[in-house]
Every structure is written in C-alpha cells, then in structure tokens.
Amino acid sequence: MTLGHAPAGLYLPGIDETTHKEAVRLCARDFLEHHVFFNDRGFHNHLNHHLLSVFSLGAPAKRLQEVFDQNKEILLPSHSPMDVDITTENFTEHFSNERCYPNYVSFFQRELDAAGDNWKAVACDYFFDPRVFPLGMSGIFHPFIQLGYGLEFESKTIVATALAQTCVHSSTFKTMFSEHVFADICTGELEDNNHGLSLMQILDKMRQDPLSISMEFSAVPSSKVSITDAAERLAIKYSSLWSVPTTKEGISAKYHELLSVVALVYGSMTRPGYKLLLHFAVMHCVTSAYFLPIYFDCLPIERQAQILKAHCAVVLATFALHGSPELYITPEISSKDTHCTVSDLQNNVNNQWLDVFSGAIASNDMHVPKVVRTLWRGSLLYSFPSKLTFDNDYTLPPPVNWLYLARITVDTIDFSRFRDPQQQAKEGKRFWTFGMVGHDKFWDTYPKE
Image (cartoon, rainbow, N blue to C red; front, top):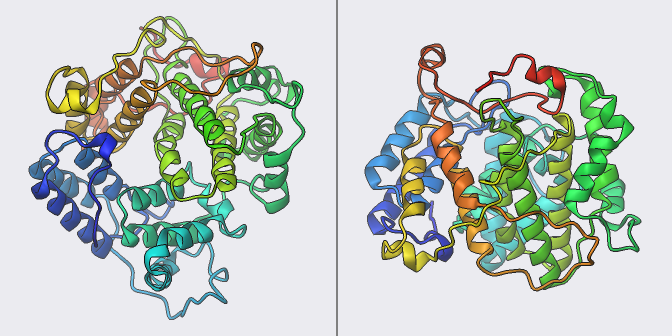
C-alpha cells in the first residue's frame, strides 16, 4: 500500500510525514482486514474514505487511529477468495457476486502492475468499459467515489479495490447507462438553438413534467419500482438537454455549473418554518462531485465530457427519485462567500475555514468531512471565475456561500454512526434526512422549527 501526498490544493496545516505514514498504515490494515461491504445489504465500507478525508483536512495521527477504531467495529472481515481464476477473458462472468471480491482485487492488481506507468489509463479503460460502466455509476456513486480516492492519492491498491467493488456491485439503473441510451444522452438533440438548457432550467422543467407530478409518495422511494423507473426516465430525458462542450474551457465551466447546482440543492430543500434538512442521497451527489476534476486529469477530453454527463444523469435521477423538490435559496446560502487561499490557511490569516475543518475532523459521521472537502473545493474554484460565456437566456445558478454550507453541515449532523441510535435520538442528535422531500406528504411528519 502506498499513498501520494494530499493534493496541493488541500495541503493544510497538520499534514506531515507522521500523519502520512499513519494514513498509509491504517489504509493498508483496512485493505487486509475488511470486506468491501459492511453488511449483507450491500452497504459500503467507508473506512478509507473517512481516513483520507480527515487526513487531507489536517487530522493528527491520534485522530486517524480513532477513526480506524470506530469504523472497524461495524465492518465485516475480509473474505477468502473463491475457487475462481479471473482473467481478461472471463472477468465479466462473475459480476455482482460479492463473494468474488478478493478474486477481482487480485485480477486488477495484476492488470495495474502489468501496465507500469500507464496504470491510471488502464484503470480508466476498465471503468469505461460499457459492460462495467453501469455498475460504476450505481450505488449512489460509491464505486465512482472509491476509484476517485485511488486516483487522487495515486494508490494502485485502492484503485484495484474500487474496480473490484464496481464489478461485484449490483446495477442501480435499468437502461440509463446501457451503451445506446448513454450514447443518446451524450449526443442527444438539444433545445434552445442547440446550446442546451442550464441545470437550473432543467430542474424547473423536471418539476413541471407530468411524469414527475404524477409520482406517488413513498417513505422509501428507492424500494418502489414505479418510482425508480419514473426517476430514471426523467433523468434520461433531461440529462440529454444539458450540453457539455468538448473543450478544456467548456469542461471547466460546466463543472463549475454542476458543482454549484448540486451544492444549492443540498442546502436549499428545507421548506420555510421547518428544521434544517440535509438529505443523505443528495449529500452523495455533493461528495462524488469532488472527484470529477481528478477524473478529468486522467482522461482524454471526450471522456471528460462523458463522465460529467454521467454524473449529471445520476444527480438528476436522485433529484427526481426524491420528488423533484422546490429550492428555497436563503440569503445566507447565496451571500458572498469567504474566499481564502491555501497560503492564508497555512499562515492562519483567515481561520474561518480552519474552524470548520476542525469540526469536520472531530465529527463521528463519516460523510461530514467528505462534504466539507467538496465545499472547500467549490470555494477555491470560485476564486477563479469561468472564462466561458453563455447566452443571456442561459440561467446560471446564483452565487454559493460555500463556507456557510460547510458550517451548517458540521453544526447540524452530530449523530454518531458508532453509538446507540436510540439513545442519540433521545438526546436530540441530528442525522441525514431520507425520503421524498419534494412531496407534500413528507412534510406532514417532518418537525417544524
């Protein structure tokens, strides 16, 4: 197991050789000791996500050990390999069989080692294989996120586990990422003089679509086939209306737009008069968006556009699945962000973000530091405005106060995955929200302020 240093854009106080070595050691232990899922329902092992996110925010070695010790209590031990030899000829024959996970890890380790310095390109070729890609975009982005960590920290071991996780994953979508449907999404006919619609315009159209309006309510929408099918149909229809130019400037501008819209949806779904709501599935749209620029660095321009379109399609499916909610963008969310550079943080010139990082590091929810990392990336990106211009009728999202969203995340989500949930509920601890927040029936039982 090896790990590259934290990316330069997040090289913060507290990251040194001691914490780096501890992160390597604990990620290696996770690889050797734990299975890719932590229960028989396919819930994902988040340990290396939690470790690497707090490590890159400046956690001390002691906190890294605490994160490991907490997470290991809920994880399954690693499985012995099946009596199967996975090769390039048969590697598709054991898809969605989680018992073959260690076999797939061994296969991909061999493939990446054989690729030499070209191992990232080989990894991406496997991920974009049309037989693999539908699995990689499943599970509210978890295989995509795992691969993102491997690419970000330049770890062939984590990349091998990500590709193995992808292969043993079940598919979330029936047709959206089949070869011909996804090709149509990427090259479909566009409205608005072939310039496409903005994401803000697309969200509005989705709310008004008869298919969206007619969706029944369910407390667990992902369990209702009629709802998941409708959400997928809406995502296919509307993701094809968002154009992504195959230029460096176009990719950058469209990523800025996507990240801003995802952040606004994340922070703006609470109806006036109700307690603040942060949604579990939408949160994964945020944390996964962090990794898109890391994928871009490994891909030719055509695939950069494809992965951006794919991410957008899953975001829209998630939005539709939960009722295409109205957004209530408060002045706090759209107020001017507090921009500061990495050198400001290292010199403690402006410590507002450092306070949020400290809270994220201390959080016992494994997702909070991942959300904060993404929002910090958004704040850094918007220090450098997009160079691409849009038509006047292309509705760009309003400004985002990234620091505010990061702070409310740290302050709101105080429920620990590692303590008795009933006791925490009695204490008034807050957790992520689930369900169809776009439907009136959801709010009948949601607490008011």
